Length: 414
Image (cartoon, rainbow, N blue to C red; front, side, top):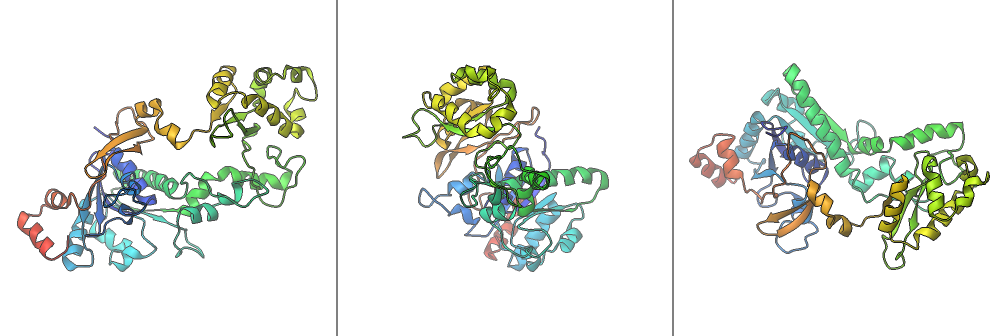
């Protein structure tokens, strides 16, 4: 048994934020029925293709464990089928532009009339306010949610991160909202509206920077590289690779950095483990010197501290540095490339990286369920072909006969 066995989701999502959410729920056992336009489907099926005429990795890696049906909601028969699907599902998830479902004739009020127990879940760009009708994409969300203003180096422009905190991050938030609403329905018997704004999701992931904005009013932020020799403005600054957790940290070069752009490691000079770190890099002299042997004494000289650490790390690979510093309890982590992560045996073993076989694409790698439940195993099943399960869903979920299905096809409703 899986955690969400028996939960049926009507998936009207596309691109990344919504599909991230519904894929996660599918991994936990929900029956996710992805509704797509006949002959077109999710736009990402054809975006960033690396092999002609097959579903792109963009699509396949976000739509595992789902069933695909095609429905033309612009036709009368198609709208009737869609209405029956709403009646038959526990959740409707969508990430259309503001008002899209309303214009189709399926407002929240109408959906409640059709199925009072349904959870209607949406990803939006912004919450109520001056920008609520604006479209939002990943990097727009990172900029408007505070991520970009606090990412990068102080002497450079704002920078977006490679982690999809806007799209996938909001999808994760929406998944939590859905299962919470389902849990409440067990007690109330009623469905409800669940909305996650991408701006809100990014800001939630940037909460420590909002913390620092308030701390800034009471003096300089001592863990930031601007202290004590730089200047602070009136907003939380960009802090490069500084740790931000009160323990100084930085990325330093390792052996081979001249050719390998990822031959780096992150090291935190945690006070409790500093003695072992100092000895390892050949600076045991710091331990008896009041100019170096306390965090307060080192704070104005952190650039020198990391320069000395880097002189040592440049003589070793990032993995050799790990082997030396981990037994000393020095927090550190190599900068791992996507190639290294894709080849890491332990990630294959835990199902975090999974190889999937697709009927037209062949074998490819994908990220599996990052959340592990001991009593709900998550198997990764390939993404569906466009409309692959139309007949199956119409028959098994809506109880339509073969003649009714053929009539719907003749009417170009599916």
